[in-house]
Image (cartoon, rainbow, N blue to C red; front, side, top):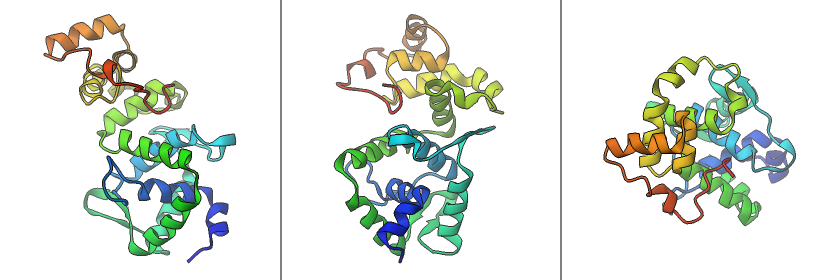
Length: 211
């Protein structure tokens, strides 16, 4: 198994292990990540919380993407046997990977672990469109090469409502996703039978990257 220093020298693997190892909603550790796109986007949001631009992403047609992360992930599956791909494309640590990730996790300060847990809890149950539209709205520069903008324009109001109902967004953030004023989105939510105070009342609610 790689030493702690060897793992730390491969920064994409280091934080990929942390994301895969992290619990969700107080459950057991090693909760699967829904797939490669979720892995890239969660790590992208996490990179905004790390010092000095530790991990760099490119703006690809499918949003922020790190080619090296994909190579490292494939190596972990096909060579190192530290990650397995489950049915439906979900990614999870193997027993070997779990041992390595635990060492990484225990070496990080509480603040970084809290960031990782918060991002995974926030994004892991998002549908693909919800995740992408959240990324594009919060980090608009990532949409500059996007092939998804037509789909974004067609579905952004429905996705904004969904994010609000799931308490993934305040009214103001959901309105940003929808591309309209908060008052206008509130009328749409009211017509759909949704009370518009719900997410706004969550104490300290600050979605990752939205602060």
